[in-house]
Picture 1 (tube, rainbow, N blue to C red):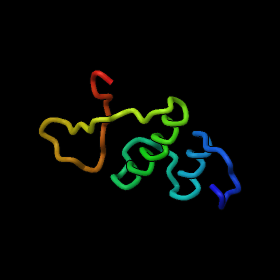
Picture 2 (picture 1 turned 120 degrees about the vertical axis):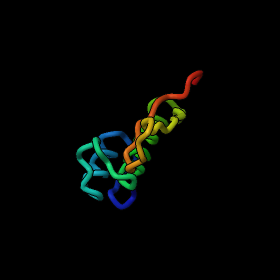
Picture 3 (picture 1 turned 135 degrees about the vertical axis):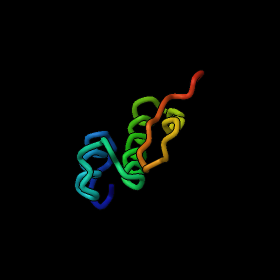
Length: 78
């Protein structure tokens, strides 16, 4: 953030960062590496908005191998 002379984070800044640094503009069919980067920006946004990071659970479709694509669901009770 100092490199870009920014004092505060918001999701627009996060999305611009993903596009500028990694060329990520589409959020479907991400490879594992890009999925982690997008998730990190989402976690920062969640923390800014809610003051907590919502816990996520990784789900892989039944009978399918993980291809680096993930679906995330909120854990029940949280």
